[in-house]
Length: 345
Ligand SMILES: [Zn+2]
Image 1: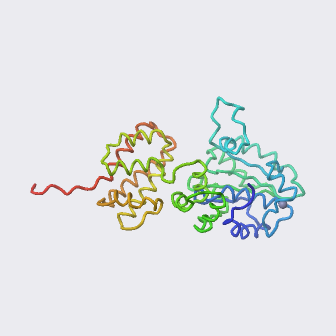
Image 2 (image 1 turned 90 degrees about the vertical axis):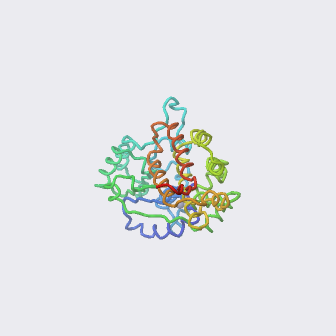
């Protein structure tokens, strides 16, 4: 896909209008699931297009055909192997014993060096697309930094990131930042409907208004309300001890369920303040029932705990222990506060 998403076209035109005095490195970022990687790729296609229409790639010229086919000589995609496998650009069977890397490695950055010395097609741009930039390991990030300190001619680096705070600050300081807003709900809904997504409104809300995330979840056939949240609400209202929930959490990826619980926690917190839930409006009655009588301060403490877990979730030391602990912590923190016994000193 080399076209901008519908909500990206106006900001893209604005951005590309300055292409004559373009910065040599851009950090393109937005919330996850809002299409920053798609924006960067469509941006590369537009920079390489030989007859752009209204600033954007025409989709028909030789350069556009090359970009679509993935073989434009002036475009390099630098991404972790696991991303390349997901795109179908790298065969897993090539080295089935090894897990595909989740990092952008220094060899990938070094392999760009000879490319900088080759002439570009008809003297146009050369575009290096790096995504997600968070996947750059420290050594690779430093190698890239060195290149950006003395940028090669006619070359634009487009880095796409969801969490720029996780990047090397010196690298960030070498890039112009382009922040993409969360698309307007109406535009996202219209787009999701063209993609054949049912329950688009509930999906979009559950995905925090991030349309690509909503689409991905629909395509994977995931329920709008993740199963562990469903189970949690049941267990919370029945006074469950956490064992059932722990089993469910253990079967999932901590990074996934921590994220889902962070969203549910915001919904619970909104309900304690008499506001409607944001992520799961269709489950308002159940969420309100659990939120009734809860102490907002206690909820906030658990929200902090969840935030800490989010940082560790990709590398839990002991997933079973984490699942057990999380199930108990989460359920305990939604037990209504009992009135203190009276008549005691
Ligand atoms: Zn074109």
